[in-house]
Image (cartoon, rainbow, N blue to C red; front, side, top):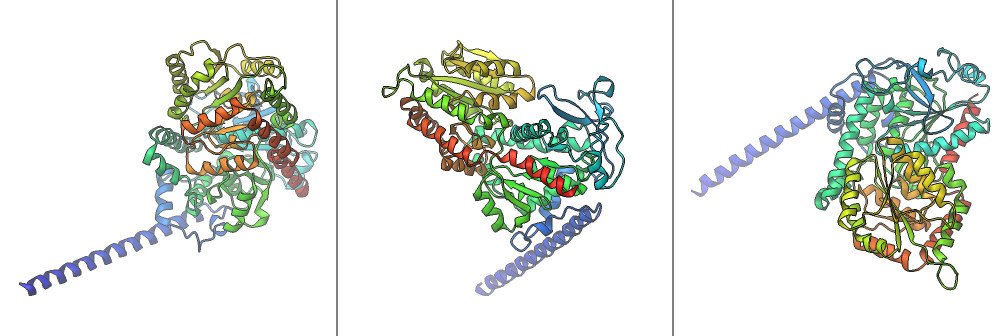
Length: 572
């Protein structure tokens, strides 16, 4: 019986060895097949974009099977198109002096709103804009194009409407670009949102964005292990993530190929910068998001600008060459930066009023609570509003609730206000209404008509712009540590969506203009109580903002525009 048992063990070991050997052979075959597919994608079509030369393949070796699977899933096997989509532009209905791009002719069968040439749109002509914006694009040398521009190149702000963050940064950059136009240092500023170019390429982006937004909402609301898994996934923007994004960028080239390749492109989404490099653009600036270094957010063969020194050091250690990297500062709108001294003085005076013999009455703290573009955090924000209700009833707090264009958040806010008995509130539904609300509160002696104001919109632009507009008259911005973590306003950093955001909260805390991340309602309430009970924390944050501003910390977008124009002048 012992011999029979030994024989069975031997047979089992042989079978196991054969199975393992077979699996190894299959795995190697899949790897070789995937590698050949990946290389065929790089060769056809061949583009200037070279991710593998940018990423250290020894420390970040390609996982070919992963790259092929993810790219095939995202594109459905679609072959990149070599042509270009003819574009036009029209005056932004929201931002004076800003031109918005779209496709020249409406897409067949599309229901997307489109402005025809008869209704005011003009064919996009960046080569001859200084003399005739309506001229048809023709090919010429870079020097000829520079002469046509009279050394005043247009500035293209390239972005993708994924959530609010990338658009918010794009509008911030556009505000400084328009200033350069006003100072006659640049031609027109074009807001080039790839999703606004109605096309198959835009449809590819929409599919990816829908998946990200859905996952962000689900994981944030579920919390626990599911949220942790999604959070960890947001830290895995490795070389393969950049390879996958680079392949997608090749698909998007028709959205940019109608422009001269020496046009300055300031990209607020890495996918735009990758597509521009793949098209052969020579003056591409990528505004790197967050405060956590990942290959996913930087782009080969262009200038990557970062907001803080930690990211700068980290990217250098990852192997990004110094000529592709520069420390610029935070991505902040011009209006916020230029009014920092006055806004901080007004906040400090409000914070001190009624304390320690300062005179006057104690002022309620104004807390601005926005919802991100993905619509995540509903459960946490609703709990926070409910917890703040007693302070509102006592007159210690005023709440500015920005539901954006998320109907589910408007419904959630209305429900929690009813449940807590806070039914006496104002509602603002237009950009004009938001600006009137802000302008009234710029008077140090003015207060809002109601303790709570709900901002809710049908359109996308006011949903994004409202937080920027109201930041000037808010004492505290309570937000997740996203792009808003870098804003020059005292901040209560609430629970993140994705672990990569935790490092942005650290940046704010170390600069002295924000708290550490409040992961729970109790911690958030503790911070708010500090703001309410004493003036010192608010005074310190505002003083830090003034100091940071004097050091140029918030000049990132201003510097990006200046760098783009300097590079354009060098190429002229």
